[in-house]
Length: 205
Image: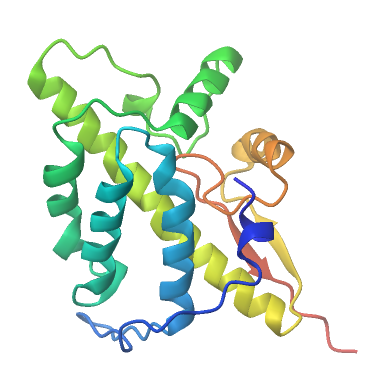
């Protein structure tokens, strides 16, 4: 997942108008929608059971509906029910992190206890429930990586310096593992990760 090198020069495509939903009002510029487009097309192909034509349909449904990807209530259930619920699919990044954590006999603090191993699904209901969980965290990861990419592009453009902020100190070892695997990785660095980049404001002399 070499996100920065691939995305640095990507131009922002025309996207829906500034978004307003609920309270407070949220204004989302074209850069945010462009970042979501790029992260979606980077991450979704890793789900091998989703065909190229299905990926195209999924993205079109998300991007062209009211408020684009920000309106998760509009598309979240529809996408799961129509593309993910009935197929046997895996998320390789999630599987890799489960293997890492099982090998270390340790888990990130941010990774909920009930999801700290792949469950043995002994019924159709249990399998669907697990797929819903996996789908939710997968879509969350795309959503927040898009925000991270948009922030990176905007901050880099104006020459701001950033540093990674790790919410839970106990998760530092997992952050280090993620960055050793890909120094340019965008938060979330692993499933359920809460780390983020913050801008360093120079001290006034």
